[in-house]
Length: 213
Image (tube, rainbow, N blue to C red):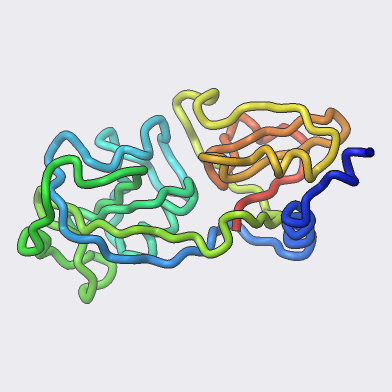
């Protein structure tokens, strides 16, 4: 049986979405989880190794800091890495991560600072984060996307290469923390990426770019 005959129905759906929809961001819903302690030893550390993304610098304490911070802005940042959790702190800071609550139980009174970008939203406190869960609406589907780049300090930590003789095989290997692929059919080369962004070092690499929905 030829490889194309073994493609699952899911992969075919992925390819149809990839062919007809162009987008950069992932689709998600947001759920508030509580106000959790977050002292100097940060709770949400998902941006480790990232120096800049979506036009924002990642600080040494692993936060994106911006004077117009909102729930929506933080969500767009964290969804780029497929993170299930985001936290907002001291009005202007956004953190992303795979877990939360490492410093104790939530205390709602400790989150009393309005977000700089939207005074009706609460962005944590001095040493506490307003933590949200992110649920992705179609995590097993892919869409073709325009290229957007980000800067990392250790390239090999953010992608790996596998062989794929066709597009569907490449997509089917994007599992677990893989959020996107860059596929070069001529070389049968599939880059499995941890963000829906391309490291700047791959800006001259040919291929079709697909991200999770």
